[in-house]
Length: 255
Image (cartoon, rainbow, N blue to C red):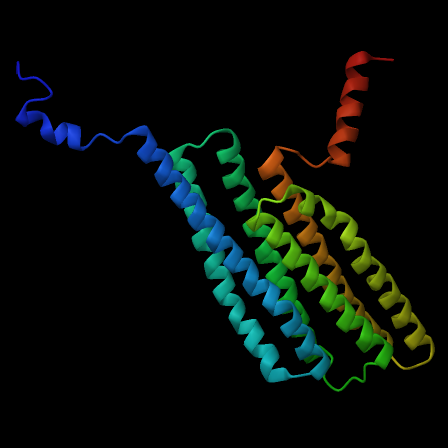
């Protein structure tokens, strides 16, 4: 019992000691792996958006079903990545910027998965529009919305991969282009209905497609906000929370 720690009998104890720099290296290896996997997951969505657009415009039912089936792969990637993030949080207990990186990744996984669901919804719409003639103007706007949604998504993931806060911040303004296309698209649906080129039900189905693209753009902007938080600690202003705080302050101050 009087043996010193540097004696041969203590070698097993010393061999099990993990140095702080080893812990940090392990964490950053895990974080690099999460980043790589998240970018890969986002790349699947980025590729699916134009694929779904082409499928819709061609009314390709077989390809639409293939896109729907492929969504199971994205769901599996999401679950695996979330589990990896939670494991790092539990085992590494990161602080400050490292904590922000993991929290941001968890939030972005959800944004990416929902974006994938929206691309699948576009593919599903192909079946509902089977036999319907889409006017050239509407076809052009669908193609433009698809291109813009893809561009926004690609920039959002690039901002994350490069930890580029200014690029991430620019996404909100860049999304205005997609919003403008969406407004033009809805106006054109009304015009086509007035000209009896579309029934009311067909117009509703087409309007939903525009909403899917618009929401994909919103998710790209949300990813940008997560990147800004990760890099700088900036939190987006929540108008509802601000109003609640003002009401609470008013209640405390009294009349």
